[in-house]
Image (cartoon, one colour):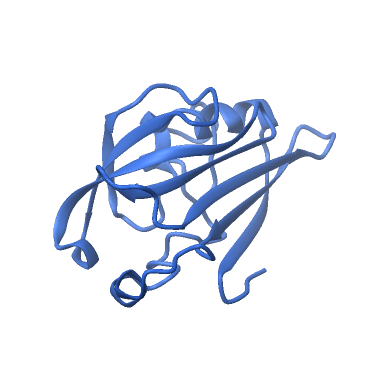
Amino acid sequence: MSNDNSITVQREIPASAKEIFDVLSNPHRHTDLDGSGFMRGLHHGDRLERVGQKFTMNMTGDHMGGEYQTDNFVSAFDHDKMIGWKTAPAGAEPPGWEWLWELQPDGSGSTQVSLTYDWSKVTDPDLLAKIKFPPGQQVRPGAEPRPAGRGGERQLT
């Protein structure tokens, strides 16, 4: 599902919501989820446990002139159900885009995962011209957060 300001992809993943949330709440594992190739690794941050927490990622991309960092601020947190963060260039306030993961167990050991990428609050015309939303292949149905031990360390299919 998508509109002019957001896109949502859904996928059933053969893992419990707890196992999936364990991956999503661990910034060290976020490179495993990256479908864009922009993420290089965690610069600083701990396991995500509450709204307001910040973690910093090392990134790379031509759209930003090469190597850069992002500060990510947890904007939604409901243990084993929902987690989201707003992303900003390091040292800046979030300019208006957010990643939101929602987990719905299906009762059979699998979980329906929804990922929404919402850029509806981006108002800076220079930023909108510089970064195409959504950027590259960052949101794609093939991104599957699998816990380690269920198909190896790489988390994308």
